[in-house]
Length: 413
Image 1 (cartoon, rainbow, N blue to C red):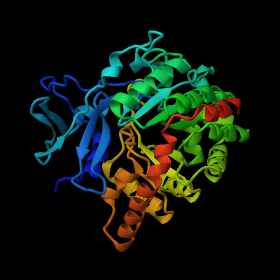
Image 2: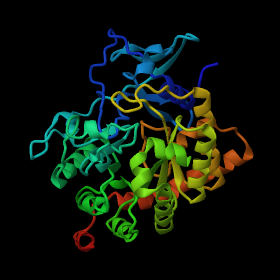
Image 3: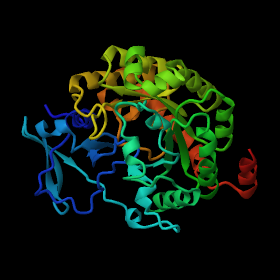
Image 4: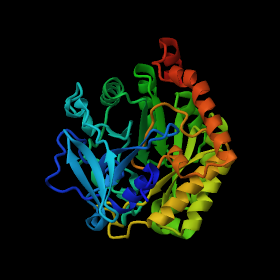
């Protein structure tokens, strides 16, 4: 039986897709080995045939070691369209390959190629704005074992990005690609992460008007989050990564030794109490620790009123876990079904913000395609639709560049 779009998305994350040399990818987005390295695949858009979720975006692995055994093969051409061929069942799934935006090849006014400032991963713009995560600078290194940030920043992307470069890139992504959301992250920066990122937040909110998300390691002085929220941040996320303390310490030695796992949940709770419901998320990697631990993490995050961002483990080329096996499809389906049920149980407004499709994870609202059609399902989906309608004016307002008086007040914070 053919898979639905979310099932196919999950299986592509787990198995990857083989791309024969004869397949013409002229005009497609290239592999973007930036930030932590999760965008190192082929961007695909999977139609769903459902009004609940019209399309699913996936950054399918193409170069990792496990892909050579994938049953999925890309077929087609720019003129005839593309298909994902499952050689096990001889099923073919029509897909769209998004074009590389024209602004990728342009430079900022300071001469920096915009693609080295930020990249689209799905429909959102991802920018690593701070210096490389400091965990890479310890001897021995304390970086998270699945991450390649220390090898990408300064190589595949600019080592430093000025506020002007970021503003120009954000404006191009907004005007030419329809991006509504920019996501800033910067790894561990001690107690300087939020202070260093505030000028970027203020500049984008003042001059461009996009929705702005922040992802940094938690800081112990929670008043820094008040300043971040005051500057106009629309979203804050915390990469917990793993729930079992032993796995957390083994895979994320810097986070475990310098910060401690409880701080992630404490900071998450603090921000959730300060921001609108659904504006805070906790990120978990599925496929490394036992699945039951991942389910507990999802419950802990949603219990705080935050939504879970669950990344299917990808043993990316160049990371310390490069030779690890990719997760089992059946396990990941179980995890993603749990995501939907946990969000529904806590009435989280997932998918409310406009045009935010993240291709490197299974979006919480993608998981609607895995849910059983019960009365609870229809009630929750009706509520989510009403939230999207009611929240539209709020998001429209937050996406407008701020007036000079507001900008001046924010700059003084």
